[in-house]
Length: 109
Image (cartoon, rainbow, N blue to C red; front, side, top):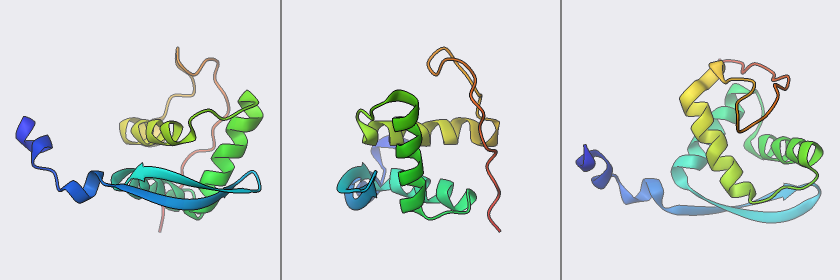
């Protein structure tokens, strides 16, 4: 089992930095390439561009929490939730609190 992880292509977990505009401010986000790929898939399934997905998520977190702490980690966790649950993402959990309305993911194509 460990060989599956140990033999990964190092390019898949290499960092990639991208410039984005969040809340009207230009900034950069540094994530592993695999996470960028997953976020691009999520954006495509939502029928939007990756920059639009990032901006919308940032705005929603800002509205819900009043601030956005460690957005890169939030994005990584969003990818994990997407991989774990896909369209069956639970609307609430002990970590997320009460259920909030979620727009179902649309299938691309």
